[in-house]
Image (cartoon, rainbow, N blue to C red; front, side, top):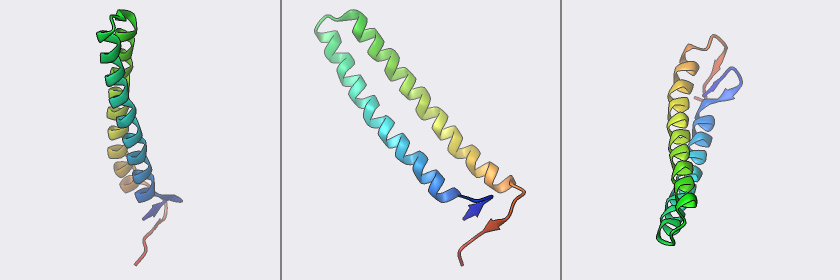
Length: 84
C-alpha cells in the first residue's frame, strides 16, 4: 500500500533490516565487551557496554518508529493506492 507516495510495507521492511543489522552489531559489541573485561581492560569494557546500551536504545526507537509509521499512514490525508 502506498500512502502519499511512500510504500509503507516496504518502508516497514527496511526498518526491520536496520533492526536486524543493529542486533548483529549489538551481539558483537556484547562479546567484545566481555573479551575486554576478561583481559582486564576496564575502560574499554565499560565503553563497550555503554555502546551496547546505545544500540538497545536505537532498537527501541526503531520499534517506536514502526508503530508511528502505521499510525501516520492511517492518519495521512493524501491519496492511498492499493494493489487489488
